[in-house]
Structures are given as structure tokens and as C-alpha cells.
Amino acid sequence: MIVMKFGGTSVEDARAMNTMIEVVSRERQRNPVVVLSAIAGATNTLLGTAQFAVESKLDDANRLLNELLERHVLILENLITQRSNIQELILEVRRRFDEMKNLCQGIAILGELTNRSRDAIASVGERLSTLIVARAMVEHGLPAELVDARSFMVTDDRYVSATPLFPHIEERTRALLAPKIASGTIIVTQGFIGSTVNGITTTLGRGGSDYSAAIIGATLGAEEIQIWTDVDGVLTADPRIVTAAKKLKVISFREASELAYFGARVLHPSTILPAVKKNIPVIVLNSKRPNSTGTRIVADPPKSNAAVKSIASKKGITVINIQSTRMLMAYGFLESIFSVFSRHTTPVDLVATSEVAVSLTIDNSNQLGDIVKDLEQFAEVSVLNNKAILCIVGEQMHSTVGIADRIFRALADINVVMISQGASEINMSLVIDEAQINEAVKRLHGEFFEPIPALEIFESIGVN
Ligand code: ADP
Ligand code: ASP
Ligand code: MG
Image 1 (tube, rainbow, N blue to C red):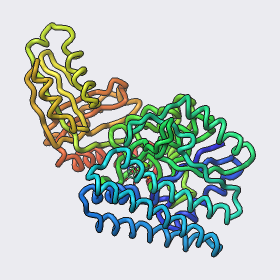
Image 2: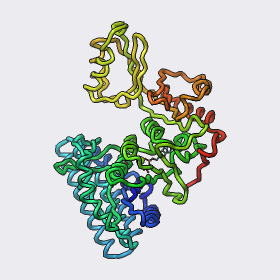
Image 3: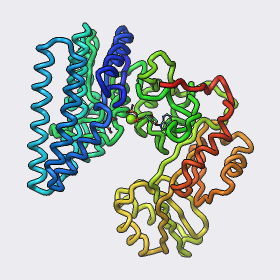
Image 4: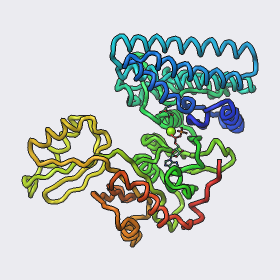
């Protein structure tokens, strides 16, 4: 079997849904499990609605909900052909929006928006897109069946970014999904959403549908996990920053993980891990150009002489400099620093140390005040805001002479506040001012990818 995940733009309207159904039916013989996102923009709208509700702006909340309702009604009127199906679906969609209006009223009355309510509201986007697509597939003569992801995607109760509980998921996917797949059913299910063991709705975090697809693929031993999106594959840079970005035909799991972690939104950062564990190739494909070949992400891609494969960037970074003479020749200092971050549940991205100082970066500064207060108990602390990470990735970088020289020459007049050569030796990360990040990405792209360095790896991209 294979997993086919379609992102928001791949189900954004009736036309996109028709294309994706066509793409699925092409793969019918390979027993696809179809994982869907909400229609483009729906999750943002839903979370915006919840925010209006807690601010007691119920008119604004209802306006957003009505607009989103109309979008869904328009889609199903243009996609579904049988009158009775249209009427039934419209009733069902309206019922869900009524429920949401009630929920918003409750939030407004209490004046409190919990992460649990956020997840309940956000989940509606994926539940609606799958409801509509599953019905349309049946009308197209496909043996499709909607299975609610909350029946098998078991997570802990850390709402808004819940962690999947693999033993439970394995047990349930084998019991609930495997027999249906074996009998030829095309399962349609939601990405992004799950539920606690007690059945309370959770989500895996923004962009989490990729992760859902990988989890389903890994637990069911898929032969391939396809991620259908709005670009030709994994590119040499974010095409929104570099219009001349090229497609990578193939990259390694390790390279893709680094890119995803350091800001390449095309894949949720956790996507690769389940695939690596079971050695399942992940293919990133463009649903606007379904005949293009995409990017294959595999364990051991063929070696090439292109040392640098791609450039990622991540804005909204805070640098914390921690200085103490007590660090000199002492042990236990780093431990005391990291215990502060772990106490405040804040992940650290990059670290650089000298004899008397440690610099590190975080991208979640919610707990910054408390972190600084705790660190000041034993060190001098300074904070730099509005920074960005620039991450250059490639398996052969560490064994190629001259890469660092080319990077620093291209960025000669840009102030670099921190450097970290990834422990995996396949990336180099620099921290610079956020305001200069796009310029820096463009310059490095010009240096390493214009013109195309190795045709066996890179390819010019098509226009959607
Ligand atoms: P989906 O809704 O299909 O999950 P996303 O918007 O989450 O799609 O991810 C696709 C987007 O990721 C692209 O439109 C592109 O702007 C962005 N992106 C950032 N870096 C890269 C990269 N290196 N390669 C491809 N896309 C990238
Ligand atoms: N719909 C969710 C989001 O917008 C999940 C996803 O698309 O991957 O974050
Ligand atoms: Mg995404």
C-alpha cells in the first residue's frame, strides 16, 4: 500500500479536488490511503474565529465562520453531482458550523480559550475536507471510505502540539485500517488531528498533516509516502524568496530532516523520522502538475559532486548569550544551563560555546523572561531579538574544501552573530539579522545554484 497526503492548496477548491481524485484513481492498484489537510486557509480562519470569540467579538467570529461555510458549500456544489448527496452534505456542513457557533459563544461567555478548545475548533477543517472528498470519490466510482483519524491517531494530551503514542496507533491502525485496505477500500482520513486515549480531540501542531501521513505509512509498512503540495518538490530554496530555485530530484533522509527543521515548510519537521525507522521513501510532488516527477527522499541517494543541496531559513529567532567566569575549567555548567531550558519546556536549536560563554538560539520565546531570570542566578545574560537562522545543507559539505570560504565571501558585508556547524556534519548554520535573511538566501543561492551545478541532482522547475 501507499500513503498519499494532499495539502491545503491541493484541496483548495472543486477543481483541485477533482485533480487530486484523478491522481488517487491513477494509483488505485497500489492500495492508497488518502490523508487530507483542510482546504487552504481554513485552519487559520478557524483559529482566527476562536480568537475573536475569546475577545467577545462574536460578530467577527460569525462572519469568518459564514465565509468559510460558504466556501465549503460552493466546493461541494461544484464537485458533487447527485442532488441528494449535495443536500445531505450541505445539511451536515451547516450542522457542524452551528456547533462551532455554539462553541464560540461558550468561549465568549467564559472569556477563556484553552488549547483543548483550540484543537476542537481547528480539527473541523480537516473533518470537512475529508467528508466532501470521500463522497466525491464514491461518486467517481472509487471504493472510498471515510475513517475518522481520531479513531486511531492516539496522542498524549498536550493540546496544540500533541505527541503521537505509537504503540496505540500501531494497534489501532492494524485493527481498523489494515483489513479495509486488504479488501480494496481506499481509506480517506484527516491529517493533523488525533485524540487522547479518552477520546478528546487533539492536533499534532501546524503543518502536521505531513507527520500524520508518515505515521500512518510507517505503522502500516507502506511502500511509499507521497506528499502532494503546491511546488515541484523539495527545492534549493523557498521559491517565495528565490524565484530561480531549482528542484532536487533526490535527497537523503538526513538532508531533508535538517531542511525541514530549519524552516523549509514543504515538510513538517517530524515527517522524516517515522519514514527513516521503516526505510520508506517519501516523495514530494506537485498536485498542480501531477505528471512531474517530484523529489525522492531516500536513505542512500546516489553520490554527486554537488556539496550543497539546499538553503533553508527560519525567522523569529532569539539569541541568548550566557557568560560566566565560573565556566572556566568547571564541569556541570552546561548542565545547569540546559536544565533551565528544559524546566521551561523550551527547545534549543543552535549552540556555540567558548571558554567563558555559551550562545544559543530559541524560536519559542514565550518563556523568555523566566528563562533569563533563572540563568541570571549564575551567569551574565544578554538577549538578541529579531534574528534569523540561515542553514546550508548537503551530505558532502564536510568533505569538500572551500565551502565555508564561498559562504562567507558571499555574505561578506552581512553581520554574522553566531555560527554552528551541525553535529551531523551535513549542515552549517549562521545567525544573522532577520531583516537581512532574504538577501542572504538569495546571495547564497546565486553562489551555489546559479547556474545549475549538477544535472543528475538538480532540475529547473515548472510553472504551475
Ligand atoms: P501544504 O499545504 O501542501 O502542506 P505548505 O505550504 O505547508 O504546503 O508547504 C509548501 C510550501 O513550502 C511551498 O509553497 C514553499 O513556499 C515552501 N517552501 C519553503 N522552503 C521550501 C523548499 N526548500 N522547497 C520547497 N518548498 C519550500
Ligand atoms: N491544516 C493544518 C494547518 O494548516 C495542517 C496541515 O495543513 O498540515 O496547519
Ligand atoms: Mg504543509
